[in-house]
Amino acid sequence: SAVISQKPSRDICQRGTSLTIQCQVDSQVTMMFWYRQQPGQSLTLIATANQGSEATYESGFVIDKFPISRPNLTFSTLTVSNMSPEDSSIYLCSVEKGTSDEQFFGPGTRLTVL
Amino acid sequence: GENVEQHPSTLSVQEGDSAVIKCTYSDSASNYFPWYKQELGKRPQLIIDIRSNVGEKKDQRIAVTLNKTAKHFSLHITETQPEDSAVYFCAAGGFQKLVFGTGTRLLVSP
Image 1: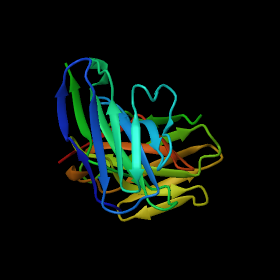
Image 2: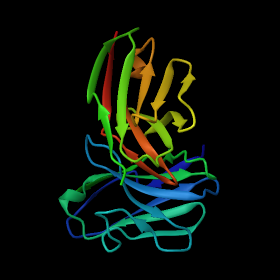
Image 3: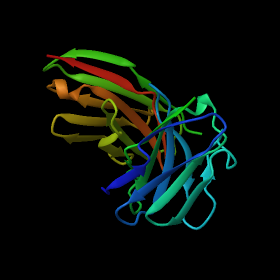
């Protein structure tokens, strides 16, 4: 597996503002993903972060709301834009090394929007 | 797209009993089926996985079975211990995408 860190670990934000979450891996990985986990719920894939190109978004998620960057093979950011209380959730990045299909998760960012 | 259903939503057992969690999937192209354990406030941890060319896989007290024809797979935990208490998620997919089940809250009472 890989050592994955996320910043911030938690934040409380005001409605209408934006927050950028960082995901850092200690080694190069082929794939990086962003998930949302609402309180007491399952994990929902937001998008696949592609190195050097635009992210691939899942149905229901759009780039204007969740812009993603992946400038290299060890780092990615997810921005939650123009936040509303419905965006309160845990946001997790995950990584896949090689072509194993195995995904390993970061510790998550707990976001509360007031 | 893929749809994964998971049952039961909650499961209470006595320490030492066995626990079984079942999942069904819809996309016959799915070829990778991992199971994750998530303790309260922690990240999901990959505990075991199985691929479509295998029917069963064991790792100490945990095992996973896969029935491709019926499109269902199960997690079996034997000799449960209080530290097995957590939420367990199944997932189905492969090709660099996973769809997760709704989760099973397992409570193991001493």
